[in-house]
Length: 328
Image (cartoon, rainbow, N blue to C red; front, top):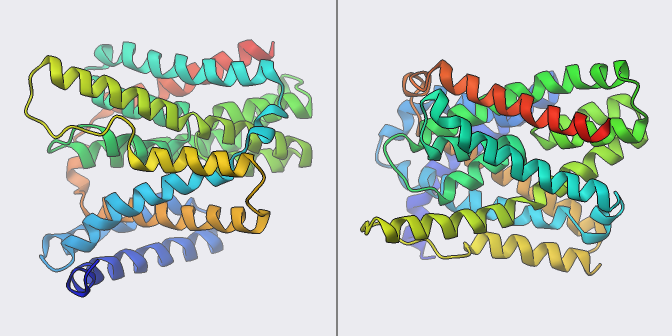
């Protein structure tokens, strides 16, 4: 990277940094989700992105920093962590993720949406909320509505995840679940990692730890889902003979995700480094979603419509019902 390119990125990155710091400050003091705040602050300052100087830095944050943050998620997971849940729970998690994505794809036509939004919404519900939405959006073919679909999905899953964080522990108690079963239910159904941790540890230490591990196994599903989706998109573009930019079969950030996961599973990464990488990943994803907000008009987001809310809610109810069936 040359000095000139650094200079061109600086204005946009400074704006993104201010939004991220403001979002984290408000989150720390008032408990609101930092990801949602960064997105909303970005949308409120959308007029800034219409100027030429900040555009390169904002684009860099929404694309390159996003991929970097997703790759670092690999250091939060290890094979030993996943195996501690038991084989039956692991099979359930994989099955629930796959079934939820297929459900979203099949139901999309009834809500009047094409496969792009269906995969984006179902993938975010099935895997890890806003982080999954950003990672999936990075591999989907771009059009004039790409950013508004992403913003709507991030807002939707974050709100639904926050509601679930409040209601699901109460539901688990009413159903008479043990601490271990409650952890499985919370980790396998709530969309975002932060809300899973909040819900789990509000019940107890064991529940919180189980919920966090289950959630991280869902996060690990992000890489294979993206690889399969990339392959399908490549085949579709070839069949239609479209002159579109070909995505690599395995995106570089997915290779990074798998590589870091493997290294962490080998026990070569000290806990302190793993924790640091997790924090850097969180800040990188905050920066990416702030940049997406800066590029998005609120009016365009609202045009997505009520049917999109219906699809997200349907997917959320579906994944919860599947996990309840497993636990019963």
